Length: 198
Image 1 (cartoon, rainbow, N blue to C red):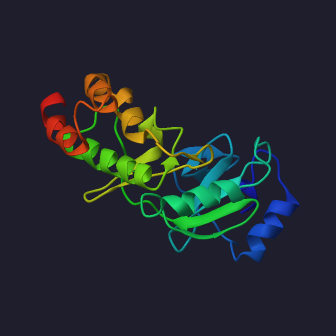
Image 2 (image 1 turned 120 degrees about the vertical axis):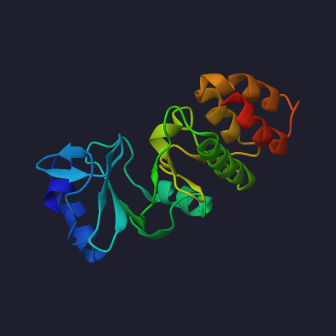
């Protein structure tokens, strides 16, 4: 487990993880750190798989955030769009595995609709996700739904614009994004039009 505490080892983080029952992590994923593989690496954390197929995000020792507790709060508020949080602390978030694949840069109409439905659900929860201008890094899609990941820069906002952010990330959909943001089409009409634009 020590190899997943990155970029420098921290006894404080190791102790907190062990006290939470997180003692073993699998070297599995596409990101190499130290001598192990992880599911993901961002500016604030390392994401690793546990033997019981839960996922833990461990705060990086060089993270600009001194705690993951606010990120945990936003992620819990975003459920079920976000993976379910089981436990969190200052240096970690233990959550369910978001089963699926990353949203491709050229998504199918079905994948895009799932992503937009989840983005709209976040808006209903008043959660503004600030990283959806690059949704392929933060959206996991499967047959039935899209998970939106990574709430370290999220905020609560009276009128979030997550749907528009996703639309603006896909060149073919920018025109739809403008129409939607101006109120020229509603969400149901937006979903109907995706097939014609992709």
